[in-house]
Length: 388
Ligand SMILES: Cc1cc2nc3c(=O)[nH]c(=O)nc-3n(C[C@H](O)[C@H](O)[C@H](O)COP(=O)(O)OP(=O)(O)OC[C@H]3O[C@@H](n4cnc5c(N)ncnc54)[C@H](O)[C@@H]3O)c2cc1C
Image 1 (cartoon, protein in one colour):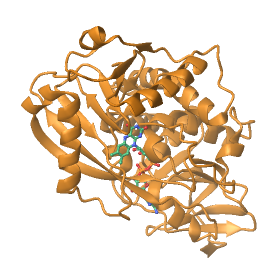
Image 2 (cartoon, helix red, strand yellow):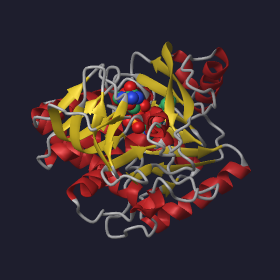
Image 3 (spheres, rainbow, N blue to C red):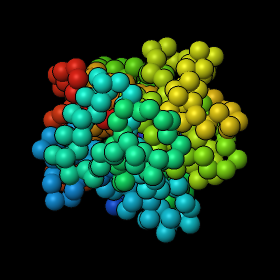
């Protein structure tokens, strides 16, 4: 930690980490006219945010605001996506690939059917459009589904985004609004005075800031530990297989438990994803790749016709439970943590960004942040409302 360094370069806000969370935070701030710089130790948007599938949940009925902040975060973020996507396109000319593809959730066993029925009960309460399909209708909604599935629910509003396109559009929009996005400039430490950070240290010299936002994904915990702040962000490895069908073989997003198939309009299909505790290792493995193919071929046999184009892995940033951290770092008034979004960072990024903007601007946060505090008690197991 550097103390009392003089800093010539200065922004109102410095964001450490240029994944989808850091870039979204910087975009929300740039939209408020705040001078913001995003620093990434490598090329921004090449870690988890690039690796993710871009699956977005269906928004709930706007007239039925969920009661719990975790559900509010998900619902608000889902409703912001179409708005942000249109605005990004208008400002940059870039399409982020946001599409309302619709999705089908399927069950193969009695236990899975029971679990899906419970989930459908929650959709009903939240006002998320869904339809339990009669077996004769499975093929109407998704002709590629394997015969013999036990249950299927259609969610017409489930959507997707093309992660690399979205990240590119965010970076362009930030720069279009006079924000800065630095590649290859990592945050190495913080300058502090009492309970405030005054800036960050980088290999190219210090940068002053009124606020610093730590959005460094799975590396956030390590970065904050340097300040004595405990915010574990253990990496959760996820692998994906990308198929190319040459023509669209699948229409809808298909979900089966924690596995999913995401069709792109160009005939590609993403098969995801594993969930592994493998430290910071990002090498794809044969076992996982075969397991994902088995899942895909079992759900949609026509995918056997597709070519395997690529496999990759990324590191989801974990947290102490299933919720992200959104809020000030304990002991610091102007150091904000926006990290630990695990399986749901793409989907939760717009609302996370708007909440960070509330904190920076001194507005009451539009969602109660108690559930996302860095120093909260861990939520009980089974509280996992963020699926993807
Ligand atoms: C296989 C897979 C599938 C997924 N599918 C989905 C999905 O369908 N929907 C969904 O919502 N989510 C999905 N996720 C989760 C989602 O990708 C993550 O939650 C999200 O990308 C986290 O974003 P982030 O910005 O916090 O982290 P990252 O994208 O990891 O970004 C962190 C950035 O910080 C930078 N950094 C690290 N240390 C420093 C430092 N000291 N200084 C400066 N920069 C630093 C890194 O280089 C990186 O660019 C998936 C993840 C994986 C791996």
